[in-house]
Length: 354
Length: 272
Image 1 (cartoon, each protein chain N blue to C red):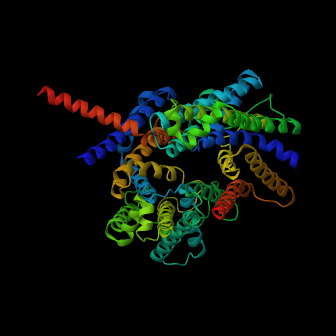
Image 2 (image 1 turned 90 degrees about the horizontal axis):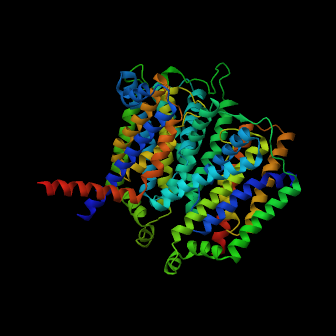
Image 3 (image 1 turned 180 degrees about the horizontal axis):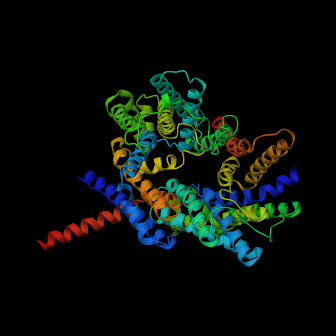
């Protein structure tokens, strides 16, 4: 019973955060937008207006599912991966580099190898932080952020320098051959088969965490590392492994964006996937399955902001602001308690009325 | 080169002092970066409007102070996870600045000052460095407030038993760190006479690592800021001799900081 209450409290806290997010969006829109009616309309209805918007929303959902899942795995083991942006960028860049170097690969083989390369690159970048934590107790939260922050600039250098496409006006690498493009599901939208990849990743991660010995041990380490240690588990492994997995899944987000949408590595393409992944995971709690609804909400918010931006004069920065409001409020214990009280109060009143 | 490093390290040190007092009070303050950025922006806007440097500093301290209030309310009053709310402050600042800037200047980009830049000489820089480090050292060591700050970090229950709310001390310290970050941000942007999005360039993070590397003591923190500043001016000097692409230079502070952090952790592990 008590557990049930606590679950409800979490849910209530999430609801109030989402409410605050929409409220912030509306308030800022009323301050900064000139044609307020249009902006409001496109913000709330925009994502569902045509198949292009719906498809783009679902594509954003797939990418957010990857990044949200990546953070969830780390959370589950009680480690923190703050380097999502860099891991996505490096993952995408490795996939691109491989396919540009070996254009003669067959379509399927190339896609497979590029995906593996992206996952390995992202996984190693995050894995270093895990290893530093296990070896010398370096805070993985700060080290993953710093490593990724540094690598972003190195990748920027590669994308705009040695690997840049001189014929393009955009800051991007050369374009990969058409054989390696992931098939689109709802043209002209960006939705592609990585959508199923994201769902499969959730299924695989759920299976790993709940139905395998390693998954079980990882969860034990996440609950109480000391207990796990005295229980004879190698806790160091479960510091490095979840970080590696987390980075690898971030890398998958990178390769999905590159192979499915951009077909090259564009400078800064990771923005909006990395940090939002943390927000998605925070709302999902530590449950990999809950990543799916949580990523849907964020995909809707993303698409709402971008449709309103294109169709009305919705300010571009609002997307970032919305995400930050989630961060400000989502972890609040008091908000969760207060909302829970409010719900109980309303329920009590209704009961008394009868 | 040492003189150059001295000038460069003033804003870094002031932010690090903000990080030091929060760290001692038991608050993980990763919001430094966002608060520096807010200060840098507010300073340029205020100097642009009034032409007075003092107004710039005042505006910067107010803006960063307000961000600190938001940080303290969401993490202490609403009991949010301090890491997540700190991240929120860093994430909320750039879009807020861009929106205000659009409202004031019609664009969310670079704001250039025609006059009124801040020029610190080496002697003045040294003076400010010693002043801020000394002041924080004195407050922490010899005043009741300093004692309370340290106790809030080490033994909050004891503080509570003496009728002082640890959360009150912590929120005071967070706001103080916000004001310090405001000064730091104002120094960064007013020295260049321009605000560029992302002008804080990881200084908040470096400041935080300087706090760890300085073993959470004022004068050692000063020393570790100095080391970072020397490294920065070294890479500046290297730029003149061998051509290093700008993007790679931008990555140096991150890699330097992580190297410092790893060395610190190794030293700490050896000690145990």
